[in-house]
Image (cartoon, rainbow, N blue to C red; front, side, top):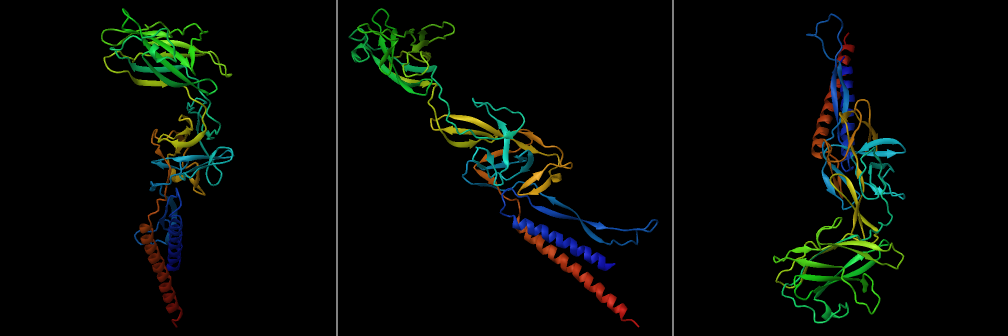
Amino acid sequence: MAFQQGLSGLDASASQLNTIGNNIANASTVGFKSSNTQFSDIFASAFNSSSSTAIGIGTQVSRVSQSFTQGNIQSTGNPLDMAINGQGFFRMNNNGNISFTRNGQFQLDKNGYLVDSNGNQLTGYPATSTGTIIAATPTPIQIPTANLAPTPTNQGTIGVNLDSSSTVPTTTPFNPNDPTTFNNSTSMTVYDSLGNSHIATLYFALNPPPATASWNTYLTVDGTSVPAVVPPAAPTPIGTLGFNSSGTLTSPAAAPPLQLGQIAVSLPLTNGATTPQSITLGFATSTQYGSPFGVNQLSQNGYASGQLSGFTTSPTGIIQGNYSNGQSKNLGQVALANFADPQGLQSLGNNQWQESFNSGAALVGAPGSGNLGAIQSGAVEGSNVNLTSELVDMITAQRNYQANAQTIKTEDQLTQTLVNLR
């Protein structure tokens, strides 16, 4: 009997050593999850036999269980690398075959798809041309490399302080080339439908008494007056800014669809872009105080075309493209999956697991939602192998192997003694 018991112990200890060896071999494998060998005894008893005198007949490997505890997160500096901080798996697609992994080492293939080293495509939620994420069925994430289309300016916000102690210009009529015909000016860049930039210059001229709290506002684009004039006619203002005794803006008044302080202008363009280009200029934050002229706010919502220059990934898995024109846009969102019993996943090798009946169906969602972990960009999750623990377990398994071998040796000596009896 002891031969069988010792042999089962040798087999069990050898299996444990194999598991430990595999863990140690993968101590530097990104996303690797360590395993441990679980044993159960073997017990045989005849019907109606007494269990008080029954002796087990050895041991067996009941299960090799993987530990899905968190590994250390290591920074790589590669913006396409991702680490999951918490529960969940990356969902991968290989020609319709779905697998799951914790290895977040990704790269772009020739078609712009995010793939791992084996060509499996990372899946997630696509984004529309305007950057809106569509949280539907996960699909392979493809990063568009085309230029970001330009957006023409249709709104501008101007916040200035016009000095209440200013004097009326000494020369009339207004001439953008004669600084004696206006008090102050400021410029900003606007963009047309082709992404071309234009310099829009605003001029402010204090009206003579009794209208000392109103300022005529003139506009030129690339040096051409708006609205256009034919010399020798003088340019006309696009509007008049009026202020009350407290220095706050009172006109132009709100006239739907325009609000208080808004002036609508049309830019005549001759470069092939959409013309005329309508822009609403807002002066609602402008003031007339007894301090020097100053520009407090100057912004517009247009931009030129831009080339993709880099990526960032948010903790919620949104991949955002950064463009050479200073703009950014959502390009997609990584989807994560979790399982009721990750221990039931079937290992495929190459840091990949497959859904099985025991694991339950994949629960897919955005990172940070439910019990899914967050994404850390520019980092990977290292192996969760504890080398110190593995080396101690190796010593224990070695001792167990030696002890079982000693059991067989002792049984052999006893058998030899019986054989030698005469």
